[in-house]
Image (cartoon, rainbow, N blue to C red; front, side, top):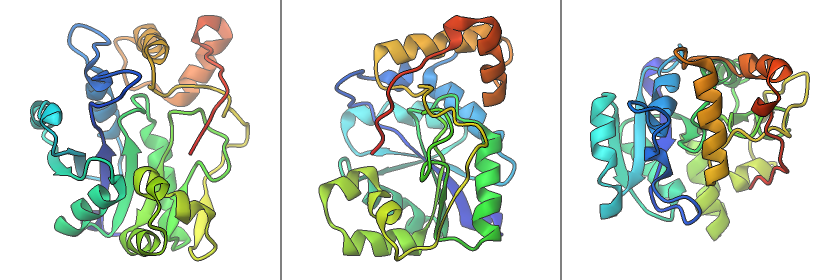
Length: 240
């Protein structure tokens, strides 16, 4: 595995209908949602490049400052065709393996990312993730995709869903070598993602519980549930 050929592509845009500008909501006076996500991503040991991938729309100009603050490379591409945005970023920067993370996962766990990366290269997969068979809380989603596989999938399946959700065709197709990183205990009924204001309030509560440590692991949160029931957030998960 060559570190210079692998990178995290962090997808973010401000045009959410349910929660506009959600990545810039403040968890504390100095910590925004996206700050938290980026800081946690930087704890990965097997990736040393992170690209913040947003759109060319004016409303997404605000990502310039936060990428600069964290010394990330900002890439701007297609608004609705997220797959094209990922592919264009990878091509431009000679990335062969994409670690796809969305900014809607602010408490993403870097250890899970590293374990998925190890599995991906050990098995020489086209695609590796922890969402083929759900076992982790919603909000810890990690996907690794070889650039060639992603390009191939987009040529075969040109539907809107595959452009927006990027890996829909790969996950369902038998054309690609895939592996799932699964936890022994199924916690997929936990909702730790950011899609609406109630999600934000929950994430804020979680972070404040662990402060000043913002690098708590996902297992730390599972353990904390036992003594603090308010840290349990169980909702029906819908993934596409």
